[in-house]
Length: 182
Image 1: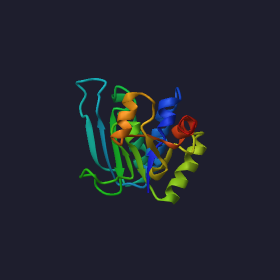
Image 2: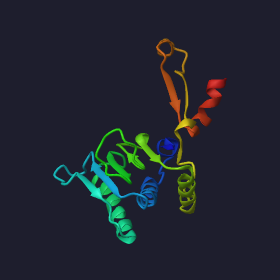
Image 3: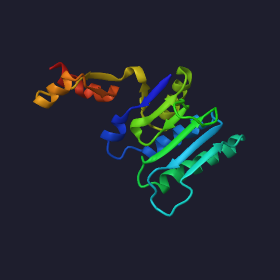
Image 4: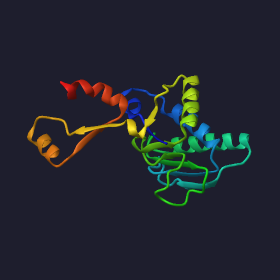
């Protein structure tokens, strides 16, 4: 099942612990993967090389955990900010676009997905809870809400006529529901 990042936390909560979420999530998902692709999309230092790393994860659990920790550190410490990076983890070699890896962070939180079974998702939620993180950091793709483009002005009316929608994560929709129902 595909789970999407609940961007409410990253976009609407000041000082949300992005690094902790990334570290905890990558470690847990990485234990179940054999391959990775990591890329710095906006390097802090333009002369920095390499900007991309790819290959097999270490087979031994302790080595793998250490490697994943260093990989996340490299990505975050070498990037201009938290988001201009790419990180894919999967149990198959990462060679083609269009596949759905177990963890995919394509360039921003808006594109962060997890491809986990319901049981795996329950386990990672328990881990987030153990780290004092919200258990709804991700949500099933089907739980998003899309509504006709909101607003009363001419532009909003035109967008609705063209079939445009505005989509919300579950947490964002909680806040917007009153506006749309009123």
